[in-house]
Image 1 (cartoon, rainbow over the protein chains, first blue to last red):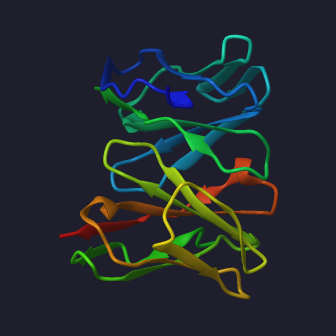
Image 2 (image 1 turned 135 degrees about the vertical axis):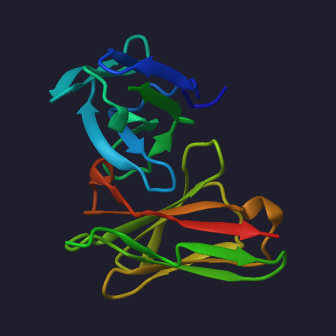
Length: 111
Length: 113
C-alpha cells in the first residue's frame, strides 16, 4: 500500500461546477497537508496548506482534513477552464521532513 | 523576484552518461530539495541540502548526488544514466524547517535514450 493514494482521473466537469478532489493516506504521523496545482510542462504551485484536522478556505478553494479517517479533500467552487491542471496532494510529518505526494488528479473544466 | 529557476529546461542524454542539473532558489530561501517526477506520477523526494550539506535523502541510489553552494544554489548530478532515469526533475526551495511552504521550479525534463 502506498503512503498516499490519489485517483489519477481524468476528471472532466462543466464550467461552474463544484469539483471535489481527494486523497487518502496510511501514515498517521502526517500533520501537514498541502495541495499543489501543476499545469502541463510546469512545476507544482502551492495552493493551500493545512495543519492537522479542519477546514481552510481561500477564495474559490477549500481544503478539508479528516485525520480520524486519514482523508483529505480539496473543493473548487465555480470552476473555470483555467483550473484545468493536475492537482497533487502532499503531506509531511513536520516542516523539516520531505513531502510525500500522491500521483495527482488530472482535471479538465469544459467551457 | 524570479522565484526558483532551473537549468536547462530540457536535456537528452545517452545511457551510461552523466548529467548535471542546476537550481537557483527563491530569493531569501536557504534550503533546496530535489524531486523526481516520472510521467503520470507524483514527485518523489531525492535529497535536501541546507548549509551546503545533504541533510536528508530519499530512496535513491548513490548514482544520484548533489551539492549546495555558499549562495544557496544547488546542483543535482546523476551518473551512469539508465533509461528509467527519464523524468522531470524538480527543485524546491524553502526556508529551513518550512518544507510545507516550498516553492518549486519549472523543472528539467531529462530524456535518456
